[in-house]
Image (cartoon, rainbow, N blue to C red; front, side, top):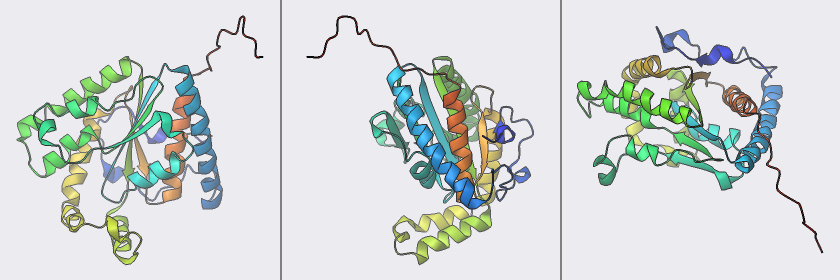
Length: 268
């Protein structure tokens, strides 16, 4: 398995997305076809490890997917997690907060969806929206959202200290790639349902979101809760990187199937 440590950010000091090439595929084991085959094999391996995780019932895994519109969050889930058993895997997509959610602190709805023992939870967008979209659209004062970096770090530290493996992925695409993907949504009748006029308005705020992501990653990349910066212009490479990171993290747990007490058991 290739070394993807260079994509793993454990300290965000001086971080800038401008230093990362969304077209890069230099860590791939081979070309597109071979790497895609390996990504498929990784998806099957994730399924095997997920069964171990569920059977052992000790560890918890939280996968956070963030990225600009069209960066491939849905596609990552569909491809990388294709081999898992839905019994112990939950996908959570955080939409605009409800009235009840707004009556609580911003992490209330997030904490309610973190994985339990033996589970994998996948956040398609997450608590990071509260330092991203909230910042870009000035939904709360700066004095409020600036405090949230430390609050998020405290929250994530609590999760990791209580047995949660936290994997955070930023799916990094270029502005040109986003334009092509938005156009594809319009041109392809099978994808047109995904298009929203709000996507065009959000695209106008590209630079503001880049700055917001720069600071969010800089402030919240830690040893126990690192960020992976995934070059995502090439979908096959994105899938391979994310799959590799998940497999490596799960294999490090050295999980074992529990041994039941079979004394006195006789099948008749």
